[in-house]
Length: 122
Image 1 (cartoon, rainbow, N blue to C red):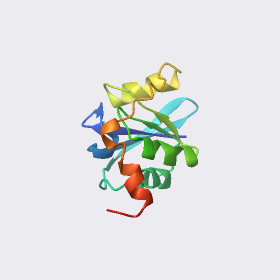
Image 2: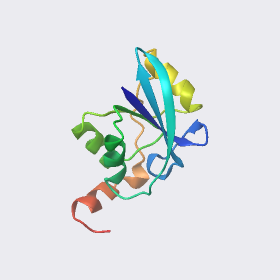
Image 3: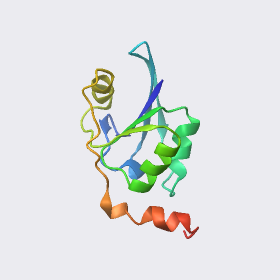
Image 4: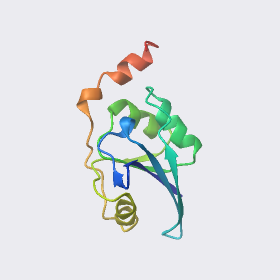
């Protein structure tokens, strides 16, 4: 499985769409085998969930995230763990031990972005 962490430097980003990039951890038999960093390709409504889906991510770990993005991840059967903080690798470790659960932290300041996206306005 692959776990993507929205990162600013080595830490989990508080804003999914505006993070520096994504650290993609490849996990086999409950252990991280490798991880690769991908620069954030840019914030467009609905773009990042598809970008991460194409990378093969099964789970997303982030601080805050907009509801529109969560909906798209849910449609793709990608688990979203929101409300995470601190070191990205430690967050993945906690998740693998079952210690990291989503706090459902949604950025309400971005609440209207998903609405705009559905009508094709940019």
